Length: 117
Image (cartoon, rainbow, N blue to C red; front, side, top):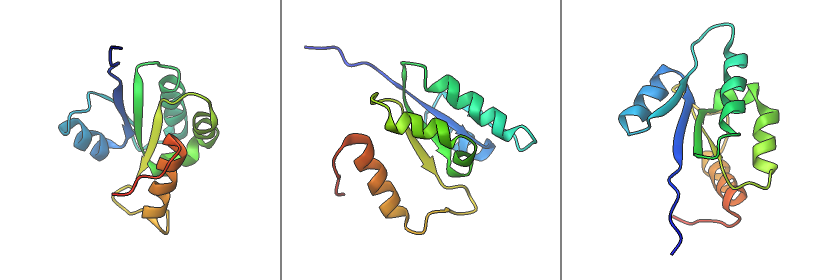
């Protein structure tokens, strides 16, 4: 029997998202402060995370995706299975008109088939 490798869940977000997911058990995080370096900080965090082999899931605010679209495309179109990057809405709402379709397409793209719940 092959051993199961434990992968980390990392949060990239503002103080509220990071604190909420830390309460849920996530121990790795990048808290992005609301300042003039948001773009730089998001890109730095994602660049570091996509090269680490122990990262399984990256949860990030969908507002931050605009700062690193090229990195997100690289990860999603790459041959590697991990990390899976999940964009979550901010407290102000989502930019996707149909969130259910967005997550369904994201899951299908990540694992190769559709999951019905």
